[in-house]
Length: 389
Length: 175
Ligand SMILES: NC(=O)c1ccc[n+]([C@@H]2O[C@H](COP(=O)([O-])OP(=O)(O)OC[C@H]3O[C@@H](n4cnc5c(N)ncnc54)[C@H](O)[C@@H]3O)[C@@H](O)[C@H]2O)c1
Ligand SMILES: [Zn+2]
Ligand SMILES: [Zn+2]
Image (cartoon, rainbow over all chains, first blue to last red; front, side):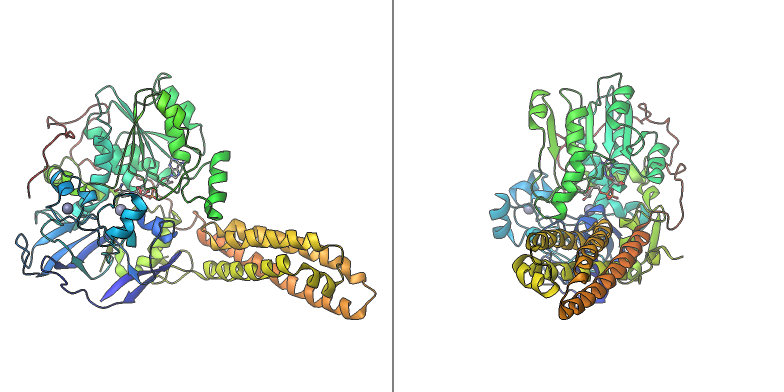
């Protein structure tokens, strides 16, 4: 089959690879009908997440049709149309039963290595690093779904691929980011990053009743998309984020802050982020923490920082003293996708939200590598790429 | 132009020749850096730069940084700094052209020719990377019509329907 294969930094190729096969009774194989490129894929593209190996198939936002099921699979049959959550779930372990699906204790097949590094390993993920199991991803014609009974979301036929595809990742990610803020009706929620995750977080915060939502980015087209939903916008290259946020909140600061940027934060001309860039370049630190620092500083006392943005390792100079003295709450994590998807599927069906608004590019799979570039370079007003194998 | 090939590369390969070039020059930098740092005396002798061993070592350190930069995600600025470094190297080596020893003068001439070549290559790659990454490529669009809310809702300010809010304590849906 054809798939997008990781070969190293900035090196993704459309190649022929062996078809996946059922390896375990609990596996299923799907024929991928749609998949997407995620901001997390860009971190892999930049080789900032450790433990990728040349030859790994990438992609963790995908859906398709079941073409084969293992003998131990009871909830799926051939022909079912399913979206795949990017977290692999056994559905039986203690964490899965608590709904902490991104922390499944059984799906990470490199658990021993990950336990050593993380203390306790997170779940297996598709198309991500070998620290999360090294499972082949879904930017491919076919995908093997391990623990298939727990690792799928059934979707109604009345909805298009474009409407439901993001149930596997960015929609629940933006949603969880907002839910973790425990939004109250008087709240101002500030969202850093108007990428696909930020866009979903903005809409989630609005649905969950925030009084005011403010979004921060430097890309005009993305700000215009967030404004379309009703968010105030701040272009951090043109104005001071701290001053504008204070002005918008009567000097109090936002009650809730969401980091939808992660470890590759840009900054206009702040010395801290120039230093971070140097360190990342010389491999003396791997994460750039400008957004985290800004959130800690500007957030209202007693507020919450919700962090869907991905960090991978060590960060430098986080003003923890400020966070402590302001009594801030930190919430973060890879998304517990399936905890939210029944509710979110219903909201899409009822027409409360249609996540396809974020798609700006749709192309055949073989154009994927070129579109990684376009998406990374933020060219052609690209916000979200969907690929059709 | 097809958005997948906007940056002047193939659609089915993410690497463009700008990226490839930067990577090649990055490795070349490591080679040079090793020579500068480990054998400055030998280089000084070859080109008649005796007494400038420490300067050569410093060039080595700078090459090392340039190499790391060229292999990083921010290769374009690193390539420009390499080009600037080439100019400095040319300036330093040119002072040795006055050497009384003919053999050394020939070495210097060869060295200068190589450096000019490097300068040209570095400049071309830096410029190429800059244009490949330029945001000006492709269309500039406005997405003010993409609210994502099919039913009209009053923007922000609590314009939500009657549905119960999701709360964290909500039981996990059984599947
Ligand atoms: N927690 C999860 O489960 C999960 C799931 C999906 C994605 N993610 C992560 O979410 C993050 C965003 O993903 P995305 O798909 O939206 O990526 P993206 O790269 O398209 O978006 C990031 C946005 O942040 C903006 N940005 C950069 N520096 C900024 C700054 N200093 N202030 C404000 N904005 C800034 C960029 O301009 C860009 O628009 C990534 O780190 C991704 O890995 C996490
Ligand atoms: Zn993702
Ligand atoms: Zn589990």
